[in-house]
Length: 189
Length: 52
Length: 194
Image 1: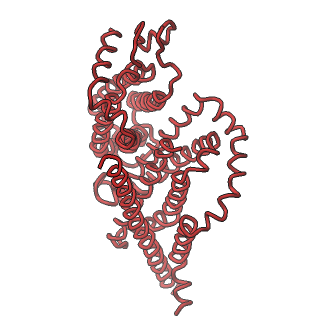
Image 2: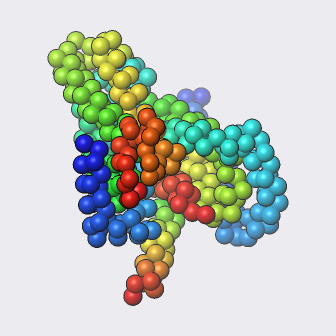
Image 3: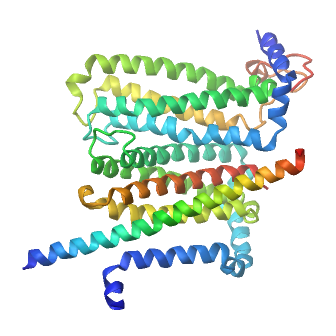
């Protein structure tokens, strides 16, 4: 499996556009900056929705209204995050696919998606009964807490990808190397 | 009488706050426009020097 | 007549004076005069506890960077929701005053997180950022943004929105978005410089 990921990453790395993007000072940094600054749109809206459920933000506005109205800018933000994130991966595919932090981040993103799905399902089922309460019921609050926690760790992991603490070397032998997906005798990093 | 003075004061304060907001907002918008224009222009010139 | 202007427009006159001072600092040579004497302060910052931890413990620095970003997300979310409401783009069916007032509290939390983590980070790389024009520009934009938020935007929106000129309100929203975008963008660029 790791070998397949590695080969795929090497293939991506060999494409002309990947090299161009990686080597372009302005283009790469602009894509990276857009990825980071769009946090304000995507996570900014998400945090407001989650904090509303916990009763910490806009407690006197109906919860469903906050969730519905801020959903659109949040999703636009996440779309931009996804596009710029994919480009960042494409620019440095081998190192990123073998980054421990990137792998944790991807796992957590799946967890975030599942949590968001359950959160919305539960909210839509019961919101009529607690819409104007300053705090949502405990099940919904748990979802909001999980969302805040997962996304915060996603940001931390995202930031950690930039650091080379656990980068692969030519002879992988530690547990971290195995989890990171380092391939024995790999020539590309 | 007192009511009149308070409402006059309130009105004066509103005028002052609004004028302050107008001055600063205008300054920020104009400054941002110039700043980002020159930033973009300088990068464009740099890239033109590098790649023609 | 002059006396009337002085007494009737204290806030306007103050902000004009502050704006001119900030411009002087940035472009009028005032910064050049104080700049050399600040090097000592920045060298000292690196010797503080924050500076030593930031320089020697890479993981702690990276973690604080991430928390800085989370604070930014919170701050940016509040700015976008508040100014978006003033522009009539988001939460249009919630009263302006409610959105502005409630997001302000969260905004203060986000700003506090950013300031606390920002000071820590600045200590860790003090002698690097001292030489970066973009760092000074960010500090200028941040000061302008904070003064604008607390001394101009908030007092203005404390009035009944019905009595305010809608054009001024919209200009305030645009200016607020621009200044916080400037702070965030120049902040990100510090990492790419030096």
